[in-house]
Image 1 (cartoon, rainbow, N blue to C red):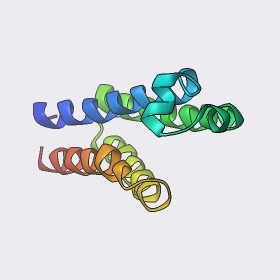
Image 2 (image 1 turned 90 degrees about the vertical axis):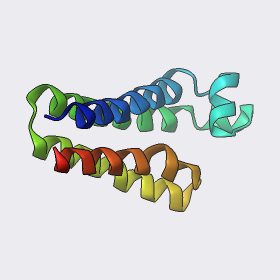
Image 3 (image 1 turned 180 degrees about the vertical axis):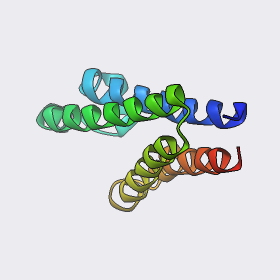
Image 4 (image 1 turned 120 degrees about the horizontal axis):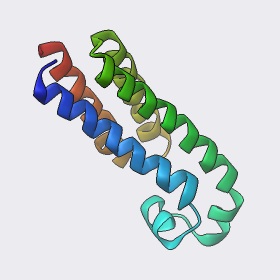
Length: 116
């Protein structure tokens, strides 16, 4: 595996580790509310939903880690594709910022994996 591709896949995984932490542990904190632009009432009401989202993001981290450790191109591309699609959906339904935070890094990493 090319070093650049590995670093980019690792970066996408790291972004999702941060998302897991915020959604599962910091959702109702001032930091979590600031990151996602929520107020205390909404954060309290949606804490379980955010935790569930965080768990799913954790599965993406696990898959990306599996792809890095195994060196399997198809595993890396599958999970990067999952991240890119989730980012497109999030950008269309929640905030365009998600496109830059999730989809762009996943697409760049996927291109690097294919080029490696």
